[in-house]
Every structure is written in structure tokens, then in C-alpha cells.
Amino acid sequence: MRVVDVLHMNGGIGDTSYANNSLLQQKVILMTKPVTDEAIAGVYAALSPNTISIADLGCSSGPNTFLAVSELMRAVDGARKKLRRHHSPEFHIYLNDLPGNDFNAIFRSLPQYVEGFKEEMGEGFGPCFFNGVPGSFYGRLFPTNALHFVHSSYSLMWLSQVPKGAEENKGNIYLAAASPPCVIKAYYEQFQNDFLTFLKCRSKELVISGRMVLTILGRQSEDPCSNEGGQIWELLAMALNELVDEGFIEEEKLNTFNIPQYTPSPVEVKLLVEKEGSFSINFLEATNIHWTASEFVDEIRRDHDGYNVTKCMRAVAEPLLVSHFGEGIIEKVFHKYQKKIVDSMSKENTQFFNVIVSLTKTCDS
Image 1: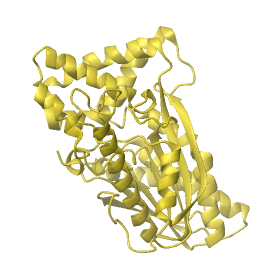
Image 2 (image 1 turned 60 degrees about the vertical axis):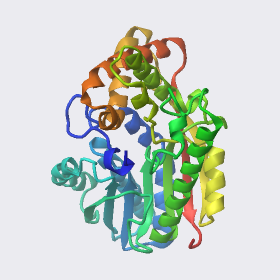
Image 3 (image 1 turned 90 degrees about the horizontal axis):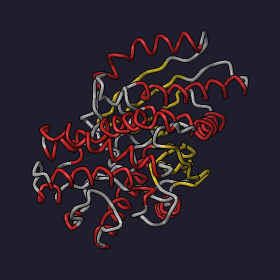
Image 4 (image 1 turned 120 degrees about the vertical axis):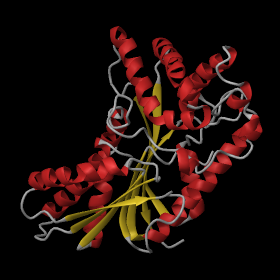
């Protein structure tokens, strides 16, 4: 399985689409708004560019695509007014994701979005130009010194490939308590190589004093096999193992399926940023959010909430599952998965953990 070919969220606007099942990701973007606002306002104040170039890496499709860049442009305009600068910069917006992303949906909705946003911002707001940039952010995407700001939310935990040696992770689909040490090592080394490559590429593409704000699905614990990082995948592994027992999936087929994801700790992110050497860390924090994206968990609504969490995960995982197992088992998998999610939510405080880091480019790599 080539990750670049099969990793994408469910497209379109149907019941299982990412566009209709990404409330959690929306809440995370809004949670990090104070950090992103401070960072991009700082870039604008320090550099006073006539044109400000912003890249959203891992933009996906649906309402969150425009939510992130809208908040960034509002922050720049707010900083301009606070500094009493009369002329608004032009905005060059670059929306990046892997080629399988539903870019068609993005650009079909773009004219209506731009018209509404300009009307909201009023006269004097600078023109915005949007560009789609298909490709992996584990390689160069932009010319040297082309960007002022990079934003990425819930994307950098995805690896460029399934780690070599992951086939030893039998019966599991991600890091778990039963994963052999060689598999744990392989996952970390793959994340390390990918994240260092990401930083090196962005160092080339950002101007000096350019900024990045990255939000990564992660963990607080230093144990890569802790529930903080992998519980949601462990439940899916249990559902798949049941289908093996029932004869719907071959055991060997399951043993060769592993999720290309690594959820890092803040310490791991800090060490790799320091190792690469091009960026200073302005802010680094771990936050958490309930699986339901709600501050209040209602026991009466647990079945409904479990259904929504399952749909959110289906929008993310279905393309990977279909690519490996085929479409025939999908409904059975998610029926079992939903039951396990509801059961888990009834017994414990199920949360995702986020690592948020704000960086400034201080030198060329």
C-alpha cells in the first residue's frame, strides 16, 4: 500500500463524508485560534509584507478547509487596523493535501466562499488568491522563501509510509501494549525521519522570521503504546479481529494491515525541532478534547454520540480499509466498531490529545 495513493478523507458531501463528519477537527482548529492569531499577527507586524503568503498543509475538504484560512486572514486584518496601516496586503492562499483529496469540492465552493468573505471583511480588505497544491508535505511544495506562514492541523501524525518491520505487529493495526519493541522502534524512526524532512522542507520555503503553527494528534505520556495515542485504533483492531474469527477476513490480511500514523509527545516534537535547527519554539503545549468534541458527556446520548464518533472515524479510515480489505466488509467493520466505541465511552473518559507547537524560522537549514 502506497500511502500517498490511498490516504485521503472520504470526499463528497454524503452521510459518511469528511465534510459532514469533521466537527472534532473544527473544534481543534478553534481551540488553537489564540496561538495561530498571535503567530500570524506577529509575522505581519514584523515583516510588513505587501503580499502575505499562507499555506495550509493537509487542508482536506469541507467547511474546515476555509475555516482555518479565514481565521488567519481575519487575524492579519485585525493586526493591520491595530497598527493603523491603511493598505491591506494581498493574500496568497495555498491549500495543500495529497492528490486523492477532494480538490474538486473545494474549488466548486470557492467562488461563493470568497464572495461571502469579502462582503464580511468590508471595503479596504486586500484581494485573496487561492491555489491548490496537491502533493506530499514530506517533500518540497513551494519555491525558496515563498511563504510567510504555514498552518497544519491534524495532519502531521500521518506518516509518509507504513514503517518497515510493521508486519511483526501481528493482530494489531497500530502501536499497542502487545506490540514488539522492534515495531515501536520502527514507528518512532519513521516519524522522526518524516518530521525532520518536513521541517527541512519548510525551512527552505519560509522566509526568515516566517512562522508555523502545527497541531498534531499526539499524547502526553512518553509511552508510545499508551491509550492516549492509540485507543481509538485498538478498538478498530478488535473489530477486525472478530471478523477474522468469523471468517470474513483472512488472518494474514489483517497481519499485513497497519495504520501509517504516529502520535508524538511534546518532548519528542521539541527534541526533533531542536535537532533540525532552523526554528525556535515560541509555544508548545498538549491539550485534550473528548472523542465527542463536547465539553459535556451526556450518558443518555451515549449511543448517539458513539454513532457520531464512529462516523468521524469512518470518514478518516474508510479509504485505507477499502484499499486493503475491499468494500465487502466495511459495513460489518463499522457496525462492530460502533459497539466498541460506545462501550469504551461508557467505562472511561475517552479523549484525544493534541500537541500544539508554534515555531519561528531563525535561520536556513
